[in-house]
Length: 174
Image 1 (cartoon, rainbow, N blue to C red):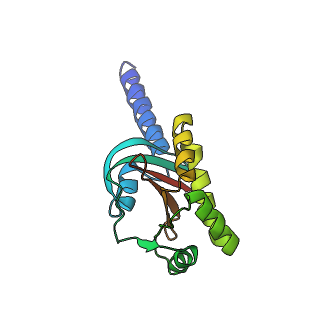
Image 2: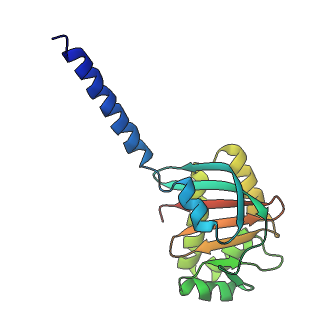
Image 3: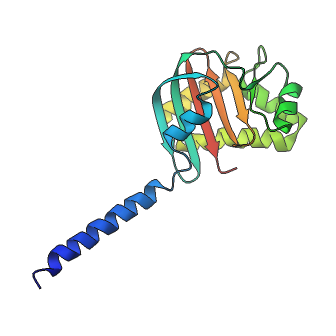
């Protein structure tokens, strides 16, 4: 029976590795996947915060520049953005004087199902944020210089915080 002890340890070690692998695979997104989703739209710098669980993903990425590329549709009106969303295109709502919160309210007023899709993506991601990130995210959502980006196919929301040169990523089980 001297061989039984090392064998049991090996089995327990293997089970522990499998359990940890299973827990890691419960995340909705990986940081690399999220960076790939938004990396063509903005020039990302380092990651300031990232957390993904079974029901939500939240990320904050520093930006080298706050310029948003033309690979995402630049909407100058809520109606224009909604038309692009209906075609399945990602949209950056670049409407002067409207914060991301006001943009989402206007989208909800114009088309409740689309508005709820935008809103639920933005709200669900906050469940993965720590308190400091939530406060920063709220400030960005209320900032009229910030830009709301919604991706209707992948169902996530991003907010480009131009004031602080960062991007907030938010996705939930929508």
